[in-house]
Length: 392
Ligand SMILES: [Zn+2]
Image (cartoon, rainbow, N blue to C red):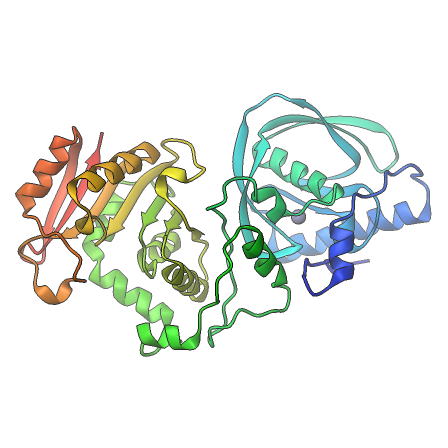
């Protein structure tokens, strides 16, 4: 039988209890409860795969997600279904790595979680026969995620220990600016736990930024046309489907466009209001941009994780010392730092008011002073803006 998925919801005590329960060991493989549980897991996971496919080649569901108290998970690896009863990690042979995953019981949420990327799992199959399986990469991650479910641990609890200033919700935000409360109570709890309690965005806030705040898709297209040269430069210097991080994205329109073009895009925004706005723009455009709040140097990504870091009208507000620090941090996380800044030739209505305007020559001198290389450059708008591509 296809069962309804139990969704974590702060307002539904019964839901949360089963999801937070350490599930019972399976001992009788012929018991009706065990047989029903396995059949329902199979049926429900089949239904999910029929609807949304298995793009990563690994997808799973655990017993408490369909309201059974038994330590069983169903997982499809490539096209093969496995039933893991009482699984345990026998060997950890790889490195711990951050994986970006979602969970059917935690709607709209994507988190970075840490798992060993090469493990041997011991388990019993649906007949109670002892088995072992070696798993790598996404497969290793998905099976270990299911094992967390069997221990009563949810995705956001696992993500919590990464860093206090880093988490990634993809929130559903309605056009009236409210976050729907149904199924999203967990988000409020998560914010409380992470000390990020803040008010949600309001319609007034949206309309102060956009006259017609219902049409973010048109807004994104307009931004893309205006920043065409920067987009072209980013695509020229980033491999196909590469990883791109935008810092200070404001509305994140460029990242939305790059994501639609197949790049793996991330946005880092410190300002909480801008952060919320960026998420709303992304939501309306139905892309998969990953958002984070915090500082670049504290991001839990290894060095050179990204192909490109870029910013638009951000670096010109920094004094020389801060600028050197930001460039160094960017080039620690990525191979290229691409940025667009106004110069002394800019027309004043393109400015925000906090800029330190430098000539093209001064910008280049600053780069060389930091022992960095100018890989590519472009002057646009009659010299009013400069795009620089920087490498080590
Ligand atoms: Zn899950």
